[in-house]
Image (cartoon, rainbow over all chains, first blue to last red; front, top):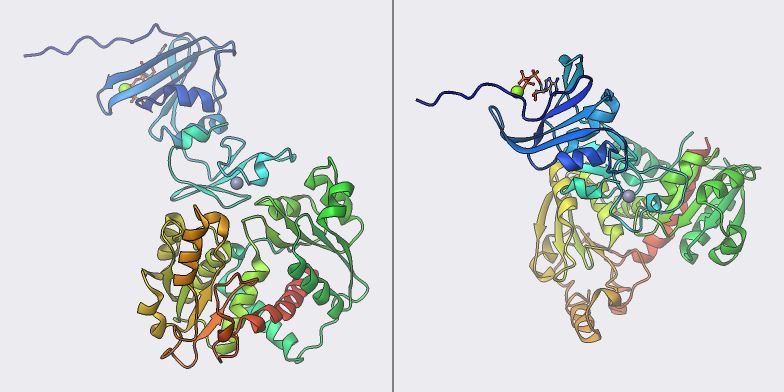
Length: 154
Length: 298
Ligand SMILES: Nc1ncnc2c1ncn2[C@@H]1O[C@H](COP(=O)(O)OP(=O)(O)OP(=O)(O)O)[C@@H](O)[C@H]1O
Ligand SMILES: [Mg+2]
Ligand SMILES: [Zn+2]
């Protein structure tokens, strides 16, 4: 009989910050991109990809120290990681846990792939997409993005 | 404030109301002078003589005056300025703006910054609601829109007039028959949307196969630049040409429409047949644009 290994944290615990758990396997870096966290920002990050999870087979996890993400910023990741859970950590403890919800409108998140679209010019506007059943629809040119949404993230 | 940007913003009831208004104006049942003392800017960042002339005519028939800025002048007046700024400035001069622009979504953007109503007179390969409304108006002159059989022939991939017409017709449970050369078929996403809205779509190889079932044949322009070489273009053009022979044995009330200008898709010998309605269709641009202007100005 296999004995389950003792439950342990894959990466070292953080005192305060945010853990984004249950990210669709392989999407951790895109999640960071959507959150605007890049190599040049100062947050201390740990990323685990393709880890085995009890309920999802494989998943990615991102831990961000000393930053508590807000609902509006986090909902944008629902596009590529609909099952993600956001855990707010204080004093090593999970004090808040929430899922992500796909927002109905995305402003400034995705670039319109239509080169003829007015949102790709120097007009004083941000890109704007309506989230519809089949994907994302550009508010300006009606272009529909149905797949590979991550590729269009600004 | 009310703008007219895209046919997709219209409900069936709104389309019906606008077409009915156009009919009353057309038949002189209602005398409209709703633009008396008003001025409309025709901002044309892209040449389009017909659309511009017919809007100008519509404004003056409603008692209003126009200021026109065409692409040549426009490029110097508006040099280096964003459309957003132009529209804010021009809003201070006039009571409404009719905008033609090469970028898709330009009219939507203009409506966000304008302080007067904006009518989209075509934004690049995007929406051109007055064209769609006059297409619908022309069909409705001959028959009720509900449940009719409509053939769309030509470049259905890039031909946005056909897309918009199909989308508008989806309110009326029509049956669509699409006839397009290889590679120029109606895009998948549009087909899905139309089917979702309850439109039956039948892709047909040959127009001959369906012509006798049609109530409307909507012909679109085949553009030379969509084809790899002249020979292919000429070939396709010949096999998609609407001729008197093609029209033998069709329903008596069939109407043939084309947004014009045509480039050989319709044999001039068709012009004198009772089915030809494309010049009537062009003329209908006046009452339809009058109804649109009145709608945004009230
Ligand atoms: N102090 C901490 N530092 C780093 N990661 C933490 C810390 N506390 C919890 N985590 C991680 O946050 C996630 C949520 O923790 P929790 O204890 O709620 O686990 P769980 O019961 O498996 O939650 P769930 O039901 O959402 O899967 C887990 O991935 C866990 O490893
Ligand atoms: Mg867990
Ligand atoms: Zn767009």
